[in-house]
Amino acid sequence: MSMLKRILLAEDNENDVELTLTALGEHNLANEVVVVRDGAEAWDFLCRQGTFAGRNGGNPAVVLLDLKMPKVDGLELLRRMRQDSRFKSVPVVVLTSSREESDIVQSYQLGVNAFVVKPVVFEEFIGAVKNLGLFWAVLNEPPPDRLQPPTAA
Amino acid sequence: MSTPRTTLRRKLITSMMLTSTSVLLLAGAVFVGHDVVSVRRLLVDTIVTRANMLAANSTAALAFQNPDDAGQVLDALKADPRTISAALYDQDGRLFATYPRSGSPALVPQEAGPIGHRFESSALAVSQPVVVDGRRIGTIYLKAGLGLISERARVDAMVVLLAILGSIVVAFGIATWLQRRIAEPILSLAAVAKSISERKDYTVRAKAVGDDEVGVLAEAFDEMLEEIQGRDKEIRLLNADLEHRVAERTKELEESNKELEAFSYSVSHDLRAPLRHIHGFVELLSQHAGPSLDEKGRRHLATISSAAEKMGALIDDLLVFSRMGRTEMRKTTVDLGALAAEVVRELEVDAKGRRVDWKLGALPIVKGDPAMLRLVLTNLFSNALKYSGPREAARIEVEAQSQNGEIVVVVRDNGVGFDPTYVHKLFGVFQRLHGPAEFEGTGIGLANVRRIVGRHGGRTWAEGAIDQGATFYFSLPK
Image (cartoon, rainbow over all chains, first blue to last red; front, side, top):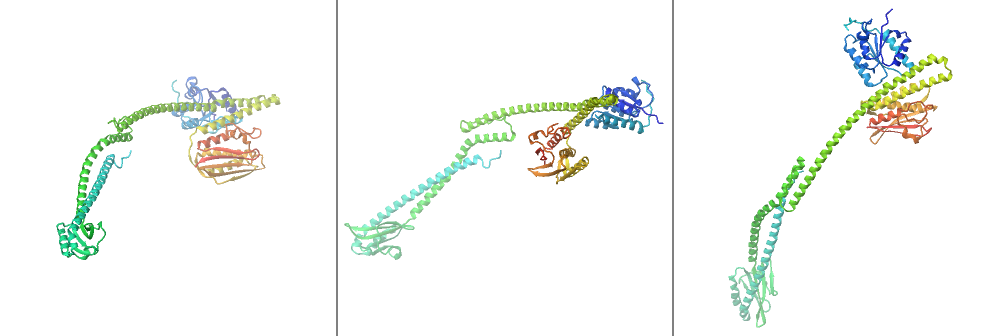
């Protein structure tokens, strides 16, 4: 049995969090999701600092990233991750309401692994999130997790 | 300003010289003519007097019929070398004596001619009666050369010629001096005008010289320059102001464009999110509480759900429409024929089970954005397909015409058509001429067609009647 890896969901909207968790729950993936409310919190989680100091485990198998978030937004977090050797190869999927071409272009330039526009129709949304969870958290082989010893907080 | 072909200087001198020379020539000719006439008159008088004197001296010789005496009288003519010949005739007009005495008979007439004088080719011939006591006893004939007259004329001509030559020299001097006085101010005015036209420098002035018309001209010229300089300054100021205003407006436009982009971003992101939540939670609600709701309750949930879906579709359409107006055009050569065939192939999948007769005419290769032009054809073809749905056999014709330097693409169907009263509404955003119960759609397709064709520099229009089919046209510049 392979151990299920964690999914990091960076999403500030309560409703979206609930709908996403509902969708992931249909494949029993909901328990593996860590929810953070903005880019700063996501960064803390990744670096195991702040409220996440001393958490268990390594990098998440996938980061589901909303673009529009308070404090540090999705694109900024993506930029930080890609510039940091520890998180350079962590798969990131942008999951957003925006179909703005500039967002799509910028995300890919920063090295996103996938860009998914949340469908308005619920059935389609459920299907999309389920597929994403299944693919990235179960089917996809994540990069070998070169665990860095937690630096002093 | 071009350099003049003949200078004012030369024109002035030429005109003065021509005037003085022609006046001199005319005066000379009159002088010579008058002199010749008076010399001739003098000659006639002289010869007639001489003939009369000879006639008086010859009366005795004639009366006594003595030709020798008569010959002696005539010999006195030797003293004047001008005399060519002379003759004496008796009462009956017969030749009596001649001078020179041994002269050939051809030199004098054989019979006496009429009284009077007559100019011959180079001589003057005079005949006078010989009268004694009032009775005519004979005739005297005298012929003298005209050498004197021609000599006189030659001398006259020489004098006149010399006078003309001398006058020309003097006239040239005077003309040169005069032309300098007249032309100099004009030339300096011309130089100023030339320098202005070449350098566009309106600050120079002609500075009026003299109190004649040229002075007035220079003064007016300076006034005009003053005016031009003033206006030039005004135009420059206005221009600078205009440029400033354009820059300001451009900045405002750029700002409002940015605002518009932010707005469309917010439409894309912020409006879709709550919509998704409505749809999502209604679904969750119907899963959770559906079984305990009655028929009416479930119908309300379904209505909320489909309204949210519809709004999602509208937002998506609006975004596409706004993107069609904003995104940069990538113009290349587009084979409209190949593009149309491709679009038809894609649409045929949706039209399975229907009888559709596509008639694709030859379409040209045009310049344009391939993705945008594909959307134009897709919208027009799918409309034709949609509105010919009720027909047992749909017929859709596509062709291109070339007129007035434009390519006009025509899409004609045999569908339900439309009321031409509302043709102006066809291409508006979210404008529909059919209810959603009849034909589905948001009403953005033709608005996109118009926007794309407009950005390509073309026009869109339509013709149709209820139940008579519809024809859509769009033009592209060649």
